[in-house]
Length: 311
View 1 (cartoon, one colour):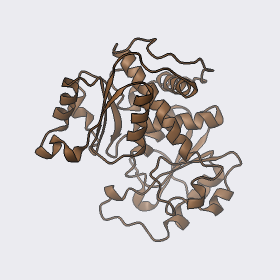
View 2 (spheres, helix red, strand yellow; view 1 turned 90 degrees about the vertical axis):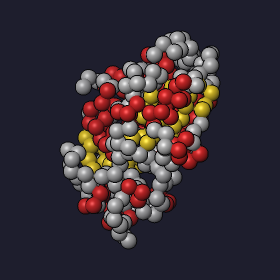
View 3 (cartoon, one colour; view 1 turned 30 degrees about the vertical axis):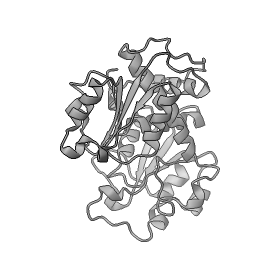
View 4 (cartoon, helix red, strand yellow; view 1 turned 135 degrees about the vertical axis):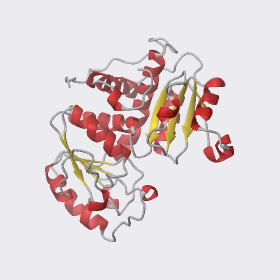
């Protein structure tokens, strides 16, 4: 694997391999026994993704090269390509990039000679978030195939919805969307159901925040939680073993009742924890594939293999 840009580039075997490696890292690891520099180029605000990459890099013994667009040469007109090329030139061994453009990687990935990881591309994709969500679901149910998964919220503006829906379908899950009319995306071929139907029939209810920063004149209705969100009444109708997920940040009292954020069903903070292990797995895989580190550079403990399916 040259870069980690989209889950479309991965086979089902590849995805399960990353999940297995992430689970290995959760159980224990040793740092990489050589100096590695990781550049984190975040052109959009981020807490969970950026900080979990930093923690993952620190756990692996990497040196992190931080970047703040509001104090960089971007303010002088430097392009994304030139910024990435600069980090490569000064010695970065890999780059993590988040940018508001849906297709930022087309500008740089053909000419940058170190691994690139997509930390979020506009409204298009968020593949590392998808992988940590898959890991969380697998840890809970021991499978993905055959599960009913509802993704509810601002589908139109969500890169998480797009990445997760396609990956879950490839792994055999039944995927449904729930959204207010202004937040639906009919370019995606997944059925829409109501939030009441979702809570009654689904094993996983994955909520999304309303992305105010990407809206153009669309206003959130005053009674969004009551009409489209996860209330305590709806949570009470969920299947006994069903779980609640959310990529965060959370708009408490909008898409989810604040009392449910850390309820027994919630796996929201578990997702965040899993983000560290998934990102460790992705970075080490790329560094191995490029020959930057050797196969035995990170010693991990053996785990039971995840069940794999063809697709």
